[in-house]
Image (tube, rainbow, N blue to C red; front, side, top):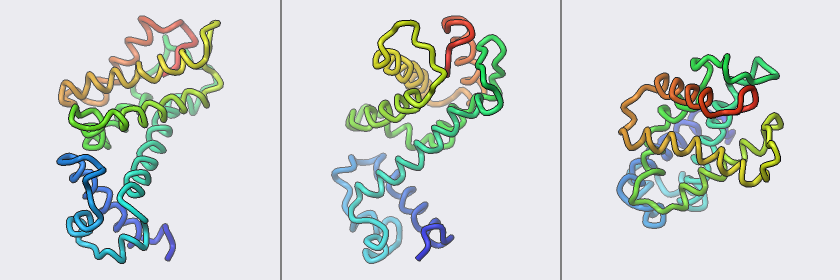
Length: 192
């Protein structure tokens, strides 16, 4: 069966939604295949056709979300070789639209009830996006520290937004980020 088959995509989407709902109630380690199948209204054979264990579902879903995050991060840079903080249009920033799209997932990640393992997985993914950014200016700062600082700056904004129960719109968060970059970023070389 083709992985791009509409039936496969719908089944996997349903399993991802069910996993997200179950993660709101309990940690990943306590979710069993039987429970996931029952809630997703699929049989175990269907589950095992696509996955070996519940962890595989999480990894696949996490990977899809991180791919979307990466695309969202790169959006303001698609049409420019040089990033000028002073002239960035907040409407080109897409990170917060991504967060809003996957709000339930991020509510789980930033919940005080879940393992910090999720946070570090997200941190590592965001950091890896910055690793790929060849335009990041280091100014003599050790690369590892700059990458970690940058990843935590983005996560800090998202955590605070989460603490506000995601009440601000994604566009309002874009403006916040751009204002912070303009005020505290090094002119002409700060990156989102």
